[in-house]
Amino acid sequence: MTLQLIYITTLILFLFFLNFFLEKFNLLIHSRFKEEHKKFGQDKIPLSGGVFFFVILSFLIINESFLSLTLIYSLFAYLLLGLIVDYEIHINPKTRLIVQIFLTIGLVLLNDLLISKTNLFFLDDFLKNFYFNIFFTSLCILIILNGLNFMDGVNNNVIGFCLLLLISIYIIEYKNASFENLHFYNLFLLSLVIFYLFNSFNKNYLGDSGIYILSIFISVLVISFINNSPYVSPILAVNFLWYPAFETLFSIIRKLFVKKNPFKPDTGHLHTLILKYFGLKRFEFKNTTTGICINLALIPNFYIAINYHNNSKILFFTSVVYLIIYVMFYFRLNSFLKKK
Image 1 (cartoon, rainbow, N blue to C red):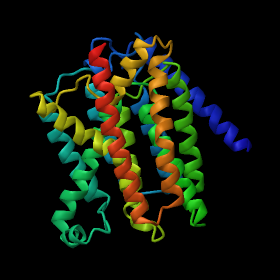
Image 2 (image 1 turned 90 degrees about the horizontal axis):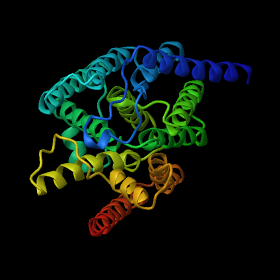
Image 3 (image 1 turned 135 degrees about the horizontal axis):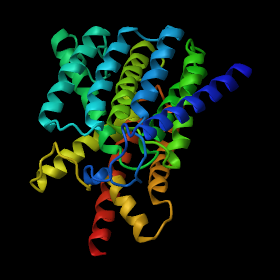
Image 4 (image 1 turned 180 degrees about the vertical axis):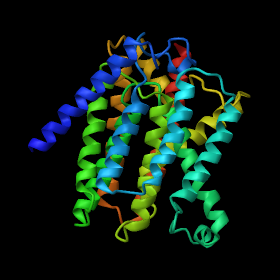
């Protein structure tokens, strides 16, 4: 208990002084003139998520001997790419995607990170081919990375999603008495909770660097968990990650339908529509409220994941139901806002 209090205090102080340092020297400060979907903040809010979570994860991976040490190299490469974006150094979206592709293939190869099974017989046959597996695993990671990036723009949305996912894995491991990394999960969950609280009050944002770090770690964690846990269905990964994955697919289709560049951000994401709705209702804390509402809506999904983690049919059905609800709610809300 005493060690946890020390760790909590250290985390809070580290994040506080990191934010103070970035503000003091005007480094990685959120700009109100970024892309439209990033404008919902105040001036002088540091994008400290990338540095914060890279330091925390590197420390935990080294000290807890959890996952491969080479993962740190991949996280650092993504951190650099994210920092370039956060510093508003112009990179063509297509060029950025190409860099992401090469970094992700490197991540897969360096960490021997191949998806072993999906429980979809037609796909599992293809996964036996080494080169196809590299392609498929890299594609899945890229979809999650860009999906979490699309989800960003309001407080708590991405951080809350990551919290729910990690808590779910934590409980599933605990229920199956196979928890070998209890300390790692405890400490990382605490870091997420602390950043969540700071983010709730507009004290800091993740930035692209923070999104990259969390998305890569979450992807590696879920793949490793599914591969090494015989008591869970591989469909659990779909249940865990349908939201960022569908956010990517839906955003691309939506932009192509209205003849927009699918690589460029816009204000058509679900969270921005909800934000606009709360704006119409004159909510005082509409930014944070939007993220919390989405987090709450996802709790039943993760509750089912925890309790039916070995039942492929229920997991798949749950994901399909959520997809239908997402689409119906999106078009209904979009139609309502257009009338206003």
